[in-house]
Image (tube, rainbow, N blue to C red; front, top):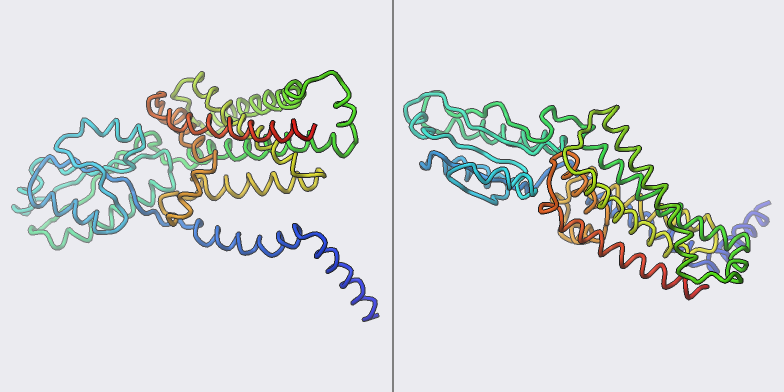
Amino acid sequence: MIRRTLAVATKELLHLRRDPRTALTLLAMPVLLIFIFGFALSFDVKHIRFAVVDEDGTRAGREVTEAFVRSGYFDLVSHERDGRKLNALFDRGRAQAALVVPDGYGADLAAGRPTTLQFLLDGSDAQMATTILAYARQIVASISPVVRGREGAALGMPVVWYNPELSSARFLVPGLVAFILAITTVIATALSVVREKERGTMESLRATPLFAPELLAGKTLPYLLVASASATGSLFLARALFGVPLRGSLFWLGVVTVLFLAGGLGQGLFISTLADSQQVAFQLGLLTTMLPTLLLSGFIFPISSMPTALQWITHLIPARYFLVALRGIVLKGAGIDVWWPQAAALAAYAAIALGLGSLRMVRSL
């Protein structure tokens, strides 16, 4: 019995030696997952883009700003005497939080009168906003005992922009739309082409008078239409069931979505040229879409809190750009002047993915 068991085990080891891709997957995947999960899965929020409006201009106001910066959580991006620039900073995503030091703050502290600091938050990411607010309250509470005065300073009721209720659904649902579209578009396109290989019908298609570009367009356009309909239905349900608003232009939302889907179609085509079976195509599609979109796009975990190396890697994830543009249009009502860099990145990715996928497919035909 032991000899027979060892014989089967030896046979499987020989199969693994003859199939280095499977062996590499088994060995490399745990290391890769531990690396990504260990560094990317962090609920700590760091490098918060922080603006200060110091209407007081006294040393006491500067001490509050210095306390926020010294905490290590906040990166000062703007320091002004009036708040007229705050709208632009929040709309463009250059600030995630802002502190307003009111006029007379220093005098009130010196006289022992209670005084209140105003704190503003970008609520489009409800989880991050809640964490940032906790940091701010802790910092203000820590400096209050050391300022002169009997009452000290307190943090007033925060002003939350774009998502006053800090609803998790308004943050998660747009991310889920991107997550679902990324997976379904890539996998559906890859499987449709590989299915032709498995059934042997690809040879029949080669014998037709169709040119390669015509064949590629015929194979991908239906999935683009289906994915677009899926995106429309998802956003409609998000509004009907979860109250997710649509504050921006429906036209520009459609443009950004089509750019994102086009990149997914190109990625699916490219995967189909690497895989000889639907099972392999499915695994490659899942591996290259689910984990990167879930962990490295900013869907759940803030990119600013990741190590620098992983932050650079996130620039290769198209969902990162789509999420910024999607939340900007849906939650903030931002115009193209705000999110055009994300649209340009999606267009570049779509051009590269479609170009590589089409080139490899034409060569195989």
